[in-house]
Length: 64
Image (cartoon, rainbow, N blue to C red):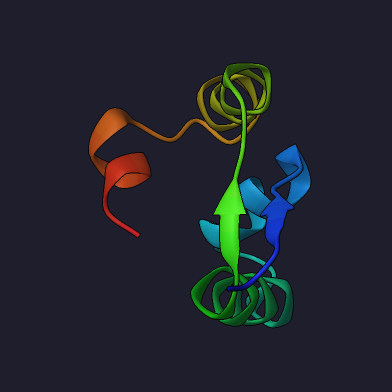
């Protein structure tokens, strides 16, 4: 059994990064190779960044 790994807000944001390909690729590999968990606070923080700072819409966020 693999250990669970907590996803920080930055990792979640990097999963959908448009500008930083390296960070996106590393985040995707990490998430796919571990048993990840997160919490609602990290998701709220990521949503705030996507909506307010990166101007991403709901469709872009839900489709990696």
